Length: 150
Image (tube, rainbow, N blue to C red):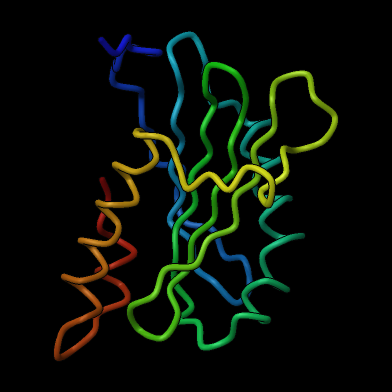
């Protein structure tokens, strides 16, 4: 018989606005496990990571649509900064940085190729639905995509 390693409880999701991280416009969400609060310090750190790490990755991938989203997740054991952007009209790219609380360095995304936890996957799914409904149509509407929120 399988034993649950964690019991599911909904987590607070907050709208952290729209960030311009050239060349992207990112919708930003905060997720907080019980007892955690997304602070202004957390937000400033996430934006600094995005500005330092995203532009070269987006440029290297190429063919970006200039749109995406970000998740700032204060979990039970650490913090995750996840950045996603759309390329080629229908492909979602990602850059994830996970750091355990108290650790000096993030976990290796090569040795631990995590996609996301159930709370993050819920938002990723919502974003792909928003993308299909606003951008994969006869008259793509970037403003509607950026306005659509979970």
